[in-house]
Length: 228
Image (cartoon, rainbow, N blue to C red; front, side, top):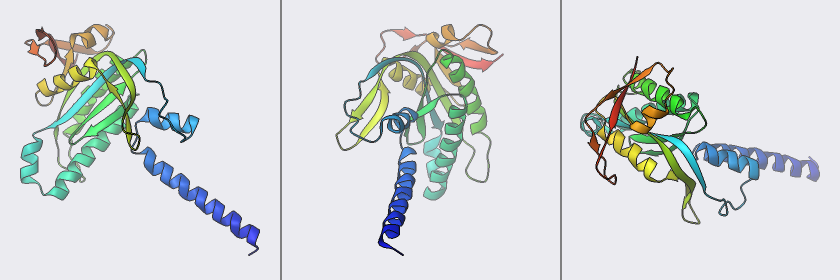
């Protein structure tokens, strides 16, 4: 093979390998990061300006995980978490949201746009129903969900060598605490979510005893979301 053809073949192989690496790396980043990198390339992103956003934040968590860790071997336990995360992630994407980050047996998701609350509420109810369905790839699990809507700051956090794109602020903290407050399996929301959901939706809110949310002054009204 002529030298020129060899160089072309090597360049094509390197390009294909780079695409494979990029595809693999994209699986470790939230959707906004992937979209930004595709649009602007992989040049230095450190000057990306943080932005204020009004979003609906969803937290989900596997209940009884400590007990599962006692009765399942490590391999089966990991498979169960992977199966649950995969199922939830696909459902979140189907409802127009994206996973911001995974944390052990739980995850945080973001919904944006004018219909963000309706999408998040519909997704949350589907999550708790789907989680209990067992298959050959994992044990059935119980999932609790917390939802809150409000302002956040979206941007990069971390070091110059490793960064994460995430949302921070009181809205995120409240959503996380609402998930902690949830029993199994249920969706617990704030009053802000209740007020933001369109009246014509086929969902209803059951008022619960107000909760003390760490970082929030006084008691906060909380609601259990259900289908009508």
